[in-house]
Image 1: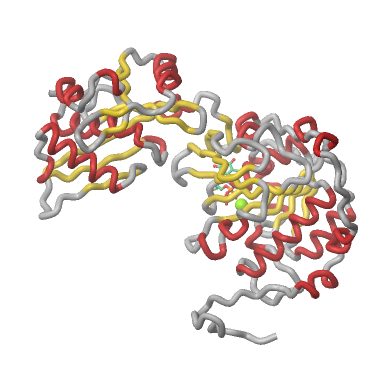
Image 2: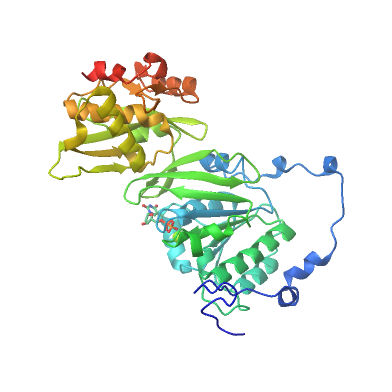
Length: 422
Ligand code: TYD
Ligand code: MG
């Protein structure tokens, strides 16, 4: 073996990754031998239906996100920033289904401490503190984790190493190789495996990105570290829809499922203060009411500031320009700050209308009616456009006590809100 700094093929530096030759792979690992038996073709109609075998954690938000439960033999990647609650979430799941917790990051005592904090006695959890993938696979075989009632959690893939490679834990070669081994074990032994992966600053290089195509399901746990709301999202799911979202709250004693998510995003809302507007966004197939806050203050800078927290910067620029041009609001000498409550990030244009309303409300120093919500995309001509799932959004707003909902059909242009806040 030789060390390469520069790729002799393309001439780029640090693009070389250590991996294994096919030959070595067959002889170098015990479980790959199982796969040598040729597969037998069978009728699709004879293939057993997986729905009946799904493992349910009865952590409703989680089960829904994975498509109704965990499929035996499947490999799921749970990705997220360090400290966001990945270990906590999977300990909850493990405590309900039972199985093996492989910790390469924390000692058994540390895991015990977390379990205790969460009120988990750990009767049905086996813990293995190990980061050598060959030893882990031996243990999996020894423990005869063949029963589908068992789950295996690997915490985390960045700490796993193979003796067969010389790269450090967390390197692309090690991550890919260890994951490949785990995927094989899951498939051949029918063990469902959940792998934790940290999103690092270099996420693209040594993070979960390189594993996404290898696993069956990719989940992301998101949220602001210093706020309580946590959102579990599917990025890929071979066994279910990808648009489902689960919402949790990080508490002293673990993660709490939030059945009524709008309530947590609106709970700290201060009513009758200028600069606040409520909108209804869709998270998966669920409508969610959130508050948009804006602060418009006269600027000391030649180029005034536009700062969006949870809203796209370019979208904010665009909406500000539309407000200036179409409603004649002179925002050119004002700094504008926009914030989304609860640390959510808005991806859909349905929030445009409420963002405009919040900005205008702060500019005019006039508070909006606290029982009014609004959603709709705002176009360059100042027109309000319809968005999907209008019925569902309106229904949710009504359910939470809102009496007026401004949507595209309330008026065709922004002048509607001009009149409202005028
Ligand atoms: P953790 O699950 O260890 O995060 P990850 O595995 O994604 O790195 O959780 C990290 C944070 O969550 C930690 O800062 C403490 C906090 N926490 C709580 O607030 N309540 C709890 O019950 C637990 C277990 C953790
Ligand atoms: Mg962790």
